[in-house]
Image (tube, rainbow, N blue to C red):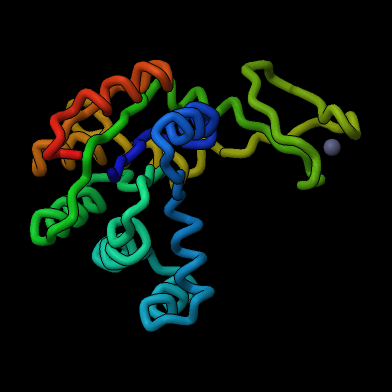
Length: 212
Ligand SMILES: [Zn+2]
């Protein structure tokens, strides 16, 4: 069983994802970890990924699909992929890849969110100058670090074009999460809203057998 867990800002839902995983006896895999593992393995694909990283370019979605083929689909374990695909381009590439392969995605779990609430999440993230001190999510203006009492720093600058572009890329023209809406449209996938881990698991287990 292969599940896609899609949400902007995945760290906020990581506890929910681990609960779903333990109920389904599945492994949670983050796209960043898969990329790093492939680079570390010194495979041909890993070298290609490293070259792109080193040059500061954006990874081509087709390269990621190939990575997922090896490290996500081609494995009998139940797996939940987090943080991919996040935008329309990534999603279209992955959908095309799955369509042309024997691989199946069982379902997408989606955290429903809109641009305003996600922007607020980004605004609420703080960290300390000392990166070993804990991060904080708060809607209060000027929090202090609980370890050193120094003022904390906004982790994301909402005036930074890259940050606003990142937030924009999560949503399609209708305000839906673009990664999942494309994937489910092209592949006809079940989309399950993230409510409680138990409810999500009930819905996944209720899917027809041939999908799973
Ligand atoms: Zn501190």
